[in-house]
Image (tube, rainbow, N blue to C red; front, side, top):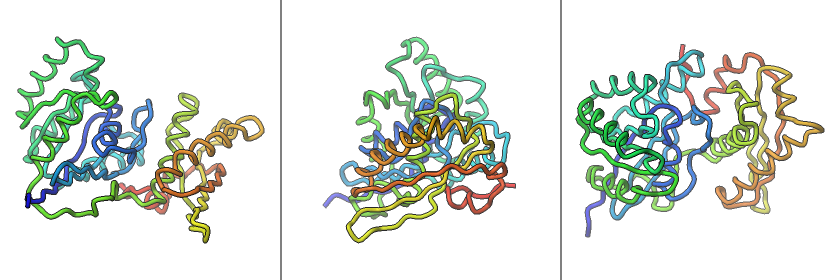
Length: 298
């Protein structure tokens, strides 16, 4: 019998490097929300990938950036916490942008850490070869990683090779989760994240980052369906009006698409009820931080 392997791989990088898309590709289904906007991921979501006798626990962390607000500080703290006790740190770099000022502090911090590291250059399908090789060479000199891999999380190029490598890198250990479990996120948290993803996807530049989705009630019904009541928190009346749209049409569309996304993820019929609440100081609500999976940071 082949010896089981299981280990924690922290996926870190600057915002919009493609960490969530890569995590989903490795797991083989959606466990982390994705949008073209930077800083979409707010919480540490663990995706669980299986490769042969190996169970790979992928911590998809928020992008590490220069924090300005309490929420920003909580997100960055969550990212570094996700890297604590990792068997391997995987730095995901947007190959198109390369080594920018945004990623320099992160590379500097990682160069001082003792954990084993690999570098994943993502979006290689859209990057000239010369730039790709120059970025790889610079990161090899700075970090001395165990490996540098070239992937496109969107097209899937290089993902099987990356998954095989991670399977070999994690230590011999019994599996920590059942074979059919793909994430440690609760259904409540997943429901909130999917709705928040739709806010980003449908409103694009119209919606600022100053919003949150809170799952107020999650009720399993006798017929096997689930009723989910959520409130979308914003800071100003003008933001509420944007989300509602004319005669509430936009909010209905957000709910419709979120419901369609959630049903297959949860494996049941979903009844989703959304309302928008103006709460100027929601970022100072400790209870909300707990609800969305972040620690309170002073």
